Image (cartoon, helix red, strand yellow):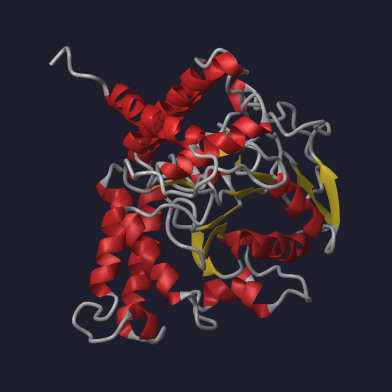
Length: 398
């Protein structure tokens, strides 16, 4: 047993052959032989657990003997009411949601909530604005959208680059809320803990890309919102967890479908909800429950992130991550190679191995590996093995 090669060594041996083949392809477009199954490292929509996909496949044409698909089901039916109830119950159990919080299902994704949050919260106090922590592209966009409805104040010194989490937070006493994004997918910056502030200003968090990737204390927040398509489902539904006393204060211009008070009063059924997306989320939440809940997800996510970051740190400078260590995301790992030509070659080799979604965001370039809940530790080890094999072949030519 002691002489048996490790998984990484096996992967390195396999991928060295593929890397060599990619390098030699100059004038033909022959398909590189598939070595491993497809692994989706995309930033979102992202990989779904295989058991979820198989169950959805089985129930596509006939949901639990009804003879119809969930796609065809009335959102007012008893069957869909059970799906809604089960989904909410799983969220409450997995996150330990207190009884004075409402769980809502909305449309529009995180970007829709960039409008919904100020429209629902600015009318709650005498303040005309909210405080924001801007640590990446998504929190920047949220702040820009909020300016349409009220004042936006930065709660920290401006960052020259999105490479770290600010340590010092200054909150206005009359702010309607303090907003931050717990994980920035594009720049790979993640808050390990919520920002501390010694005020009663409600904390609002965009958890779209690390929702249920680890336990959180919901009671610390006024509002949590998260698009499902990273860690808990497919695109189409956005979860909003809101403290009860923050409902019912929507500004006059707030569209009724964005009004938290209306959604709560109508059980998220004011109009037809994204039924199939809610159903898929229910299946993913059940998969999370069976795999150790938020604690189990965190243990796996820590191990996956350490695997990929170790490949970067042990590369003798061949790979580099721009994010400061204490602020590095477990979900999205951005890195660069010595040149853009090597990055292109790296991505070609990855595609030959059926590693999908590794190209960095168009605004920053480079490479990005997204390690959401459904990505396994084995997947991360295979990526790290490829990174090592690619480095060994090309490092001396830089």
